[in-house]
Image 1: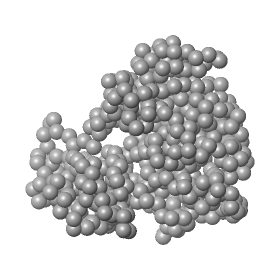
Image 2: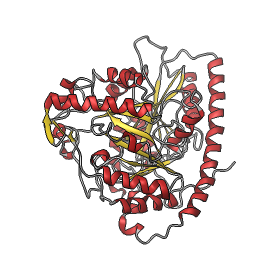
Image 3: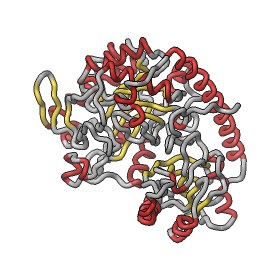
Image 4: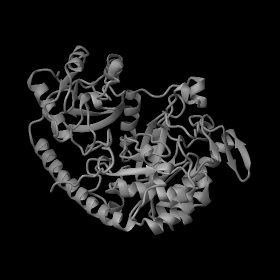
Length: 497
């Protein structure tokens, strides 16, 4: 069936992706119980299929935090950074409820409301739980989520279980207090500030206790871990094993954001973030122990829209003040659209499984893996002009099939108006961001970027517009193999994103 138009406000720009492995495993939903499947199949952070169809939003009602992290610098009234802890507007619970209903009515594919800051939601329990209570009553079709550092989690599990909250994210960066002391200078615990190893020990104990309590309640837990080279990078595989053993559903290993201009301790002190190769190597090492999330965009605490986009400026307080929302009517419309999306997702999943079976039954190529960059605005197809892409999705094609590896942000090369005077330098930066890729697939591409990509050793390809990403990537891979452009596989050779 034809999918209804999802965006009634301006179209999504760079959200989501499609991959059999970008969220978790090749068969993420097939092995789940019906109860858990219902919790994750339209959740863009928990489902590999859902994240390029369904949108999420965060409301910034929680300003205070009970720990200090060396990678965090919370900023208020900031619209120029895209990272956790940053917001443009702090909201009261009343404002948060109104904004959520306005977004859900105008972006009907929005399924998830999360509270993720800018501080810690459970360090602001009154504001957080008042928001959840109101939304449980007034917008019962929206999934509710919370992200926490875990310090106050054990005391909050019972309350969380009362408010239709089926998903909780805990940031767990270590199990060793000596490692933790290098990440957390202090925690605020029982009305006093505790520093160093002792503070880290308490935090770790609370995180692990909270994880066990959530799992016992049947609440799905995603664990976030920030990869900090030289600090916890050699430790996170053990974290992954431990949280899996305790019942965590998903592990998200994220790169440290450490640019000095953000004003974090790590940034000022020159702590580097991981390279793309280092991050993927660690994700691969952890994926042997549990399902991995590879499509995280490290969202702002007030993000709105599909993963990879932010439409928050469409729903500022002054704009939603004038909106008249009939949420009962909105829910009826949302239900129709969600059912249409589900039908399309199930159809594509069946087609993907059939294609994978044919590929497995066929003769395997004796060729090396190749990385390809994809320009897409969502729904799992190649549907974006090269010059309009704000990010590229990186896929690996190999004799074993196609898998999603990562995403790479870039500057907008062409905005389609008279502001493209700096296009050449932006184009050069875009091509540098695609280093290691051997092809880029998009819906259209101009002559100038075509030539510059070829000079950089990257094959531009605009022949697969509106095709499913994985089908197109494999088709191009087979074309490269047939043309003799791929070497035989070497035991120690692996393409990385």
